[in-house]
Image 1 (cartoon, rainbow, N blue to C red):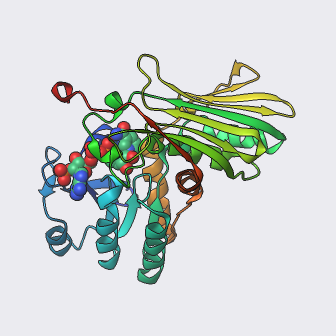
Image 2: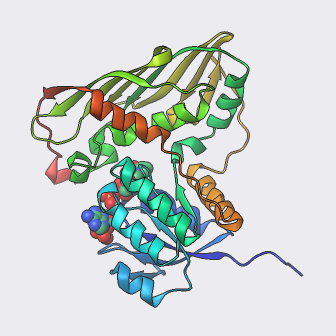
Length: 314
Ligand code: NAP
């Protein structure tokens, strides 16, 4: 006879690119979770109860006590607030909000309501990150270079929200690199200078160069066609370390490390959420977002060529 716990019901809100690419497959493959409902104005998942109004969903399904928000950051606060007010546990996609103060407010609300709030950072769950962190414990970091160059047309096809206020522009992928950096560095660093390139017709940057204390530098660019680059290269007192492919691969002194079998970023996030709910804990680390906020505060603005999505391809 099996005494395993039955899967816990969860609802996914905002059925768009990342929900379809990652959240739905991770939940459907998990024995810990049952994807019991979706809430989305137009999106849905075959075979799953679909709602298009969040208030009506909260009233109709009090038995679903965990909610994962896959919306863009701009509408996310209102949804998170309503969910917490209704005493649901909440998981936030990255970045956890448009502003730091928004997320602090959610943190306070979750604590008052006695529910879990998980500000997820999927890149921290990449296969090489934990191994890189443990390697760095025994070394002195001399400096680091982050190169995060990708094609916004490929990863955010037609998503104008990324260029609207609160969308963060190239910081949306760049914050993934910063989430890894803040996870693995033994000593924290802070931003000392930045240059941000804004397309003349947009509100958020399409490229950025960030300088931190500790000889740490980052270059983010959303105009990269062809091969995409998501690398963090670190010089230490005992040689070099490199995380490549967004943290999926680790090289130590140029030699690829054999990484243990890895469940994947999103299955790992949902395992963490299950653990947090079971323990009655929250996990909200805003360190990556502080660097982005600092870059927006301190960065020198440079105006660059206008940017448009290719309408016929989106
Ligand atoms: P998306 O596809 O543009 O949006 C997700 C869904 O949210 C949309 O399909 C839409 O569904 C709903 N939505 C959009 N704007 C809304 C609004 N103003 N009010 C209410 N609902 C709204 O975005 P995404 O690429 O999935 O990204 C969502 C989040 O995941 C972002 O924070 C992003 O940083 C993160 N993320 C994205 C990727 C990626 O590769 N794209 C990777 C990792 C993480 P309905 O129209 O059906 O309501």
